[in-house]
Image (cartoon, rainbow, N blue to C red; front, side, top):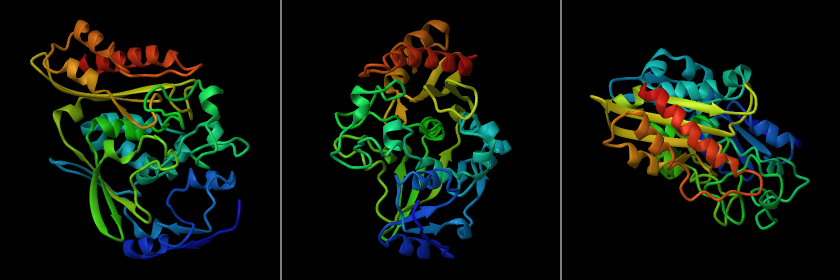
Length: 324
């Protein structure tokens, strides 16, 4: 890892100005960035420390939940208002990484974590995410953990996070602030599909930062669940995960949000499942029929075709948990 200069601006404007310089990167918890730097995947010469900005608030109201970007994952997961009003988010956070990392990692940083594709993380291999045009060895290589949804001929790396999958069913809105001002972006529009530019992973503009995360309050948010299927119980990324939120009234499903992790190149919403649930009774037959539609348009690689079956079973189990 090469040497870098650390700056600690006292306000957001100063941080954005400092980040405009060449090879500058924001750092908050640093749990992913520092590892990427050690492996020479990220090569910043200047780190902009966001800790002095504070921005660690967690505020719940009748309208919704507001999270500041430097709030720690562990603090959000344990917050009683989050546990009660947005359980899918608390559960997804607790299923992430390890307690030590959750105590350091921030909400904004978690949204920006990069893929765990082994070819991306090992500079001995070509990778279109690291060096555009160099190739994607995962397509014909070891691809058990790779995406079956949203891939392209240039990249099939899976989005590995949990939290953003939960936020997808909660209709989260992100506030982004940069030199040109502030804008709002829906969580579903924040992460980009790889297409022919897999090195561009989000809609963040140069120097822009996440300055807020807002989750609306709703009956559906209160009736939500996150299920993570992984190869071991701790500090492991999802093979498949499912996030579900349902609004059920008098035994009928009035509204539904369903998303999956471990299967897509970004957090993957499942509108085909949602459409099959709305207006149906919350009974075993309806849930099974809807879950069976999961993964429309999936394209499996050589080693990960099993994910489609596992996805449907995981969605069904999550639906059953919420509908019980």
